[in-house]
Length: 287
Image (tube, rainbow, N blue to C red):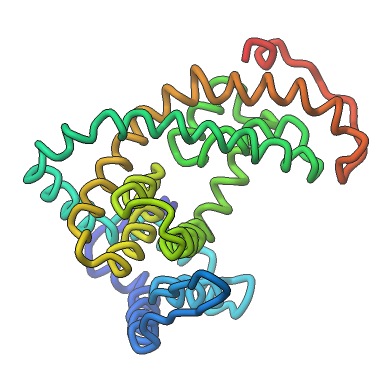
C-alpha cells in the first residue's frame, strides 16, 4: 500500500492520473468483450468482464509490459477497497431489509465455517507433497486473508515458516483468487448438485472481492435467485470474517499442526524436495 501523503486532491490526480486512464480503458475493453461461455463436457465455464480486466491489469504491470511503475502499483492497492465499497453497501441494504430470512438460515451460516476445515485434509497433504515443510500449516489452514495473517503472525511470529506459507497464499489469492472463485462457482452451478442459495452462501469465503466474483457469476446463472444469492453471500462473507478468526485460532491451526506431525514423516520420502532439518520452536509445539 502506498505511504505517500498528498496535500490536495489535485496533487493526487496529477500523481495517479495514469492509473485512472488505464482503468477506464480496461473497463471499456472488458465491457466490449462481454460475458463468454465455454462449454466442456457436462459443464460450462462463464468468463465475465472482471476476468479480462484482471488479465489486462496484470499485463500492464512492471514485470511484463512495464506500463505501470512500482510506485503506481502501490498507489493502486487502496483503490480496490474504494471500488468494492458500493457493492458492500448494497449487500448491507439487502441484509437490513431481509433480517427474518437471515435469522432463518443463521444456523447454516454458522455451521458452514466448520465445513471449511475439510479443506485442510486435502490441501495439507498436497502442500507436503510439493515439498513445503511447516509452511504447509500456514498455507493450508484457511483462505489466508488479512485476519489470518495477523493470527499466524501473532502465534508463530512474523518470520516463521508458517507465516511464509500464509503470506504466499494471501498473495496468490490476491492475484488469481477472484478468477478462481468465479470459475469454480460457474462449474459448480452447471452440475446442479447444490441449491443456488447454498452456492451463494458458499461464495462468502471471507474475501470481499472473491465473494463479489462468485456471487456475480451465480446471479447471472440464476437470475430468479439473484437478490437472495447476494444477500446470503454478503452475510456469509461477513460472518466468515468474524468466526473464521476463532475457528482458525482454536481449531484450524491446531488441526493443521497435528496433521502435519502425522503426515510429514510418512510423506517425506515421496515429497518433491529432500527433507531438511527443521528447527524446533517451543511456540510451535503449543499448536
